[in-house]
Image (tube, rainbow, N blue to C red; front, side, top):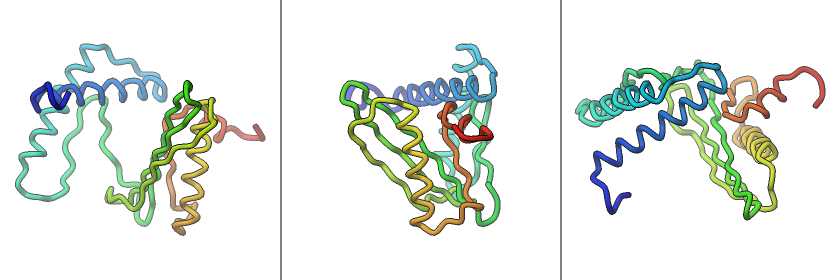
Amino acid sequence: MINCLKKENIEWIAMIMCRIWLRRNILIFENKFYSPKQVIQMANEGLEDYKSAQMSSTGSREAVVSHGLQKKWKKPGLDVVQANWDATLDMENKKMRVGIVFQDEEGEVLASVCDVKQHVDNLAVAESMTLWRAIEMCRELSFSYSKVIFEGDATVVINRINKEGED
């Protein structure tokens, strides 16, 4: 796409893809449905926000007003770390890819991990292994467990972790 399309078109495509992903997450986690027309409208608004943020000459890290599907990042609290984690699975090659990002209360990246693991053929296992790696990193980086928020999109894993009793 980079070689064939103009920058504006690539930005538009990226914004639509982002909104489709956010639409999916909101449907799964909040049981709210947005029509394709609403997704396009929110992509337009998001693109306007993005362009205005790019033109900002202040250099400050001011938050851009969010619309529709995009949720404004909220500070987790003083001295709190947020760990965002996700995994993808290549079933054909039985290979998983891991992504973890740790941010402080201002959104500054403290650490990140990208990794590949072989011999994995179950998405729930891949997501669980990724969360486990995020927890291990907290220990390695000396983050206090009581001061870390773990955020992921693996409903099955999250529901089982939050379930009382053994699973």
